[in-house]
Image (cartoon, rainbow, N blue to C red; front, side, top):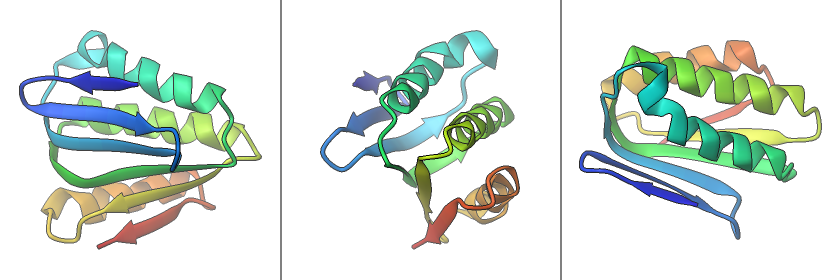
Length: 114
């Protein structure tokens, strides 16, 4: 599973159960984020025991993108048997604050800022 665009790329590594998202996501609204949401949903439907979301190279994410991440975390939370880890970068200013807020949606979520 992979999505490549001019300003961002997204792929799922089935061996490590890791979703990688990098670049800059400045899409407009739900419709433009639909392919990404579908990839997220496909990953959750596989019900792996762990899911890692690596955002350490995601330089920018707008509010629609943060909303999408929130929905993804909520979908994972509904599957009680999946443990989720989010890897972010402490060098990218928006990540520390925004990613910590995702822990409120899923208290068992493990957040690693590298």
